[in-house]
Image (cartoon, rainbow, N blue to C red; front, top):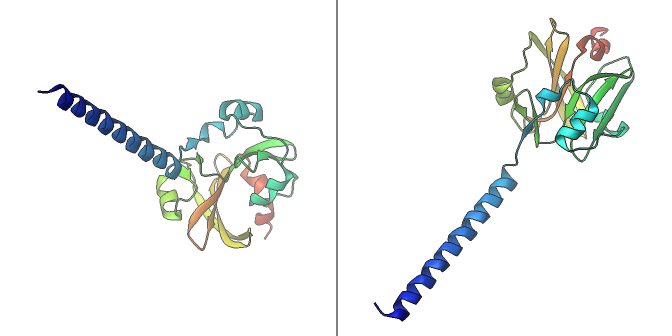
Length: 188
């Protein structure tokens, strides 16, 4: 074999490897954009705000603007420490930590991801509940339905808000004091 033929084959091989590497990188990048990594925040449902901030690398300052994103029926004072940008918040009722709220697809709660259909969410849900009920809600000018999954034994509830137009989960809130969180509903 002549030296020019050998050099030509080596150059062709290197070009092929570079092209394969570029294509693989492009596919990996597209996958990471289209299918972002989802972090399960279920272990943090009753964890202090400072631990959540440290573990998830987020800042959760007082966020009164996020209160409107949480479908609640408490007679108490609802406050929130969270980040609209990050889509996660710690929920307080009358100054006591009451739960965790997410509205960003990079998080999941009890194996439910945002954008899950109601059927998929209920099939995948790991939250144990003994009853569920729906409350119509109007969030961000879209018609939405909040489904309350309640556990009367543990006094917990999981509220999943579904956009009725596309039947997708748009927000999830875990609450550790269901009776306090839903007290206005029981009066109806």
